[in-house]
Length: 202
Ligand code: MD3
Ligand code: FE
Image 1: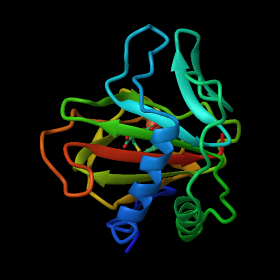
Image 2: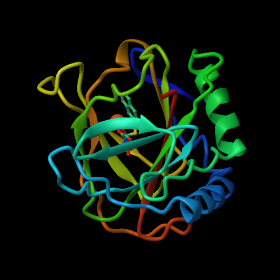
Image 3: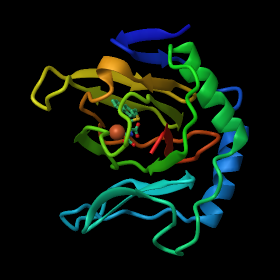
């Protein structure tokens, strides 16, 4: 069952493994409409993960900074809708973790290949930090690193496996977090990748 590993932060081990194939098929359709790309950091370096979005808003990064926007900068078209199977599950999972009526309008799709990583950062581009974040891990395992409200605090590590779901809210919402360099491997549903879906209220 769910594990509260920090105040307001919950791990639901293996929660989404049964729906994984259906969720991933729907996400494949999204990335056909809005292809994966390496966003550039404000310092003009390509991120190592491949990204896209679905929802009313998408998280984007370029030389001008990080922000949410309603259109894909590659096509100037709206992002695809969040698949209902994913949206409904995220609302349910948030409720289980104590965040009722979570209605995300942004889903960041991050695809990690071996060697890709995400440095320690805070998620603070959202307008209401009382809203939680719900994150799905599929495919290859990863090592999640998190600290407290400062990047220099004690770092803790958590393995994230296929089907695991994380909910972050309350006192842990601004915790620093990241992902260690992905190790080579192969998974029957995602081949040589890890797929992370992060749902937020922009
Ligand atoms: C902790 N993604 O997209 S998800 C991100 O697994 C991101 O690919 C990582 O960090 C990944 O921003 C981590 C888990 C996660 C998501 C949001 C959080 C942890 C969080 C927000 C606050 C604190
Ligand atoms: Fe994050």
